[in-house]
Image (tube, rainbow, N blue to C red; front, top):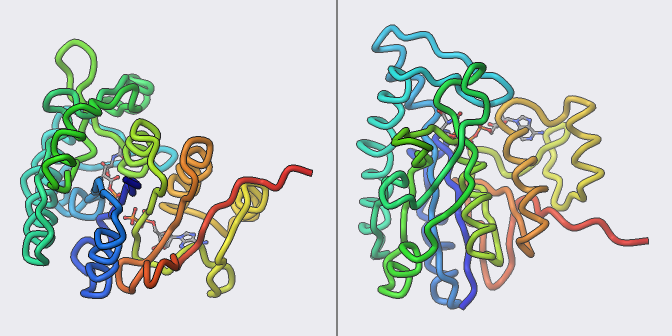
Length: 254
Ligand SMILES: Nc1ncnc2c1ncn2[C@@H]1O[C@H](COP(=O)(O)OP(=O)(O)O)[C@@H](O)[C@H]1O
Ligand SMILES: CC(=O)N[C@@H](CCC(=O)OP(=O)(O)O)C(=O)O
């Protein structure tokens, strides 16, 4: 069985199109098993605004105080996870929502507690739990909240969480679904990128903001995962065995 890890950004969760779900069903028909990891950054921002709590990002990571962590958990597990599971079930795709700190589905360590607070990098994934659900033909839907050391709970960037899951499962494909058709340059889609080309686009500022953790995850994932794609959730991403969006390729050895 081939495995695809799908990361869905908060920017597009509300706008997933019917054609996106048709591509999901096409993958299932072609015998792929799927694990979902979702974000919810914009929704956490909205919640923090309502609470009058300031929030700051450093290198694409949200500085997470205890108060921010509570809001993030509330939004991610209480709202975004529920919405995504229901959407999948409405489409006839049996899914199960998992709060990833439970049973150490995701385990993480602090990145830099002083600088970032309760923010983690995934150190381990409880594959057994995921495999249990996959065997039962239930699509696991994971929050990017991890079990930290000494009873802590850590906020993980959802792109990084998806990369870690793809690595742990030795997934064949990592798909990062966002609100743009892929990596763009001057408005045009770049259908394929090597690591060197991607690095040059970051340095020239063509790739910026939220696209940076995404492409960095893509490059890291290439070390363990055969195929990495950034695609739009508003359009079909897989049709008749063909993948759309930007595909990342290992450098050709010279
Ligand atoms: N070169 C680029 N090509 C496409 N999008 C880019 C690029 N550079 C920056 N971006 C921005 O990255 C955004 C996607 O990242 P983000 O908003 O964090 O998405 P998500 O919530 O899906 O993780 C796009 O909406 C776009 O504004
Ligand atoms: C540490 C960190 O930055 N965590 C992210 C988790 C959600 C996320 O990554 O959501 P998107 O995929 O929609 O950006 C946050 O708090 O926003």
